[in-house]
Image 1 (cartoon, rainbow, N blue to C red):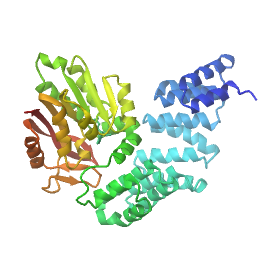
Image 2 (spheres, rainbow, N blue to C red):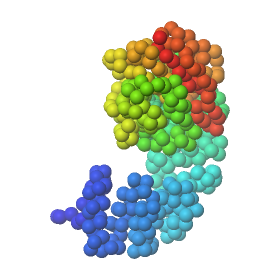
Image 3 (cartoon, protein in one colour):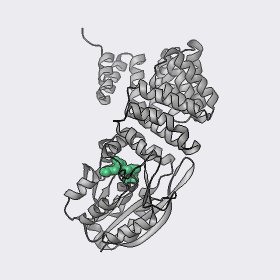
Image 4 (cartoon, protein in one colour):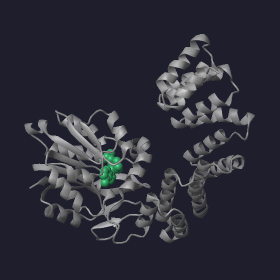
Length: 435
Ligand SMILES: C[S@@+](CC[C@H](N)C(=O)[O-])C[C@H]1O[C@@H](n2cnc3c(N)ncnc32)[C@H](O)[C@@H]1O
């Protein structure tokens, strides 16, 4: 049987070909300007592109055609939620729940809004109500865990988050969520408090890289000197889409700080011809700040996460982006860069010797290396494996390593690099010159 235009548009939408999908929906609207399915499909396409104004336009037209249909109402509520207009979102949700008080999507969204507004008891109530209809829903257990954590019902919160991991069949995103819950709760209540949950998780999923990294961060041994590439890849592949908005919320400004140092220390006309390596470039935030400083735009980026690189490629700032482990990339490159920058990357390495060796190797004589490092405020060791799974470094260690690896220190500037759990994360922006 031949597919209708709306059915074809839906196939393209599900395959991620939004342009073709939108073209078909517009074709439908030529025959019937108020076709509900086509209007909702166009709204969804704009919603995915975060073009909320246009999404609202189409959803509202759909609502006019079928005022009681929950699809457009819920989508309108989603736009309200995503753009922080919670009271607007509630109006639409109330309309849906008045007709169908068990509507699962509306209950979940209601819970999320309560969570965002700090109404934790109401959030727990919404999520529990929704769970009665779908007791095996992975995200509902995860959200309920978050809401319980906010109510300081920590054990129950961990139970729910672990349930989400199990129900998802061990999906990476749920492992990461659980790992983050363990870290936050341990930070507040102490490591022993979460020990039984950590052990249960570790016993069930010992092979998983996220589980191993978290276990190592809680119980480090002498072999835990650097994060495993598989862990980094998974973490940032999952995180890539929301990386910039999350870090904006954490007041992250390592890339600007690095660029400020580059502007100060890399001067003179020669700079115009410099070749730059953004080591661990992620989504290309350093590129954004460095590009205006270096006229010929010879910026190269390397990163383990293909998804982060996909975001970086969109910025159109890099001459080349390479998906590789930093250590293997550096070891395979000849001497060719005038500047190497590393913003918030050293925190995934404990032992920095191989990294410094590799950077020294690829830098031209007199070349500059600018990096940020987070400060070890816990002990006076060279590095410290933090419960978050990141490494913090000691100032003495960094200074001695710079000297031993053939660099002169031009600047060693203590800064707040970002915030985490409401606290400042201190570190340094360090500028070195190759001897
Ligand atoms: C916190 S992000 C910072 C990204 C970017 N430098 C910025 O400041 O926005 C850390 C990045 O380092 C990358 N990374 C960590 N360890 C790496 C390694 N061994 N090899 C390549 N990339 C690595 C991660 O994939 C991630 O994209």
